[in-house]
Image (cartoon, rainbow, N blue to C red; front, side, top):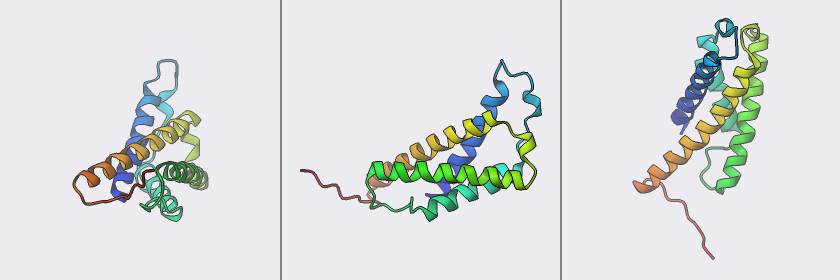
Length: 134
């Protein structure tokens, strides 16, 4: 799941960057520069560590509890990444729109890719999640 989350975070950053640079009403899209080190190493590591610390990889949680944990973890991870970018003096080249779009896309991609992975593992009978029906 950690590899899937890394892919989701990287895809979220790439999607946010591409949408931010392709907006027709934004004149200064050329000023946006995402440092490779922060975009593909620091931010994913921070987000994955926060997911680990919040027990987002436990399989014994209900679906909506897991979504709540992922939402809280991604929110805290993005805030932590912003603090690290500020401390590393990278924040001057990053727009608020890019940060907001990356937050939305990372959240969306992490939820969707984790759901797809769990469904694939359940179909292959590599993962069994007990469901109690009334």
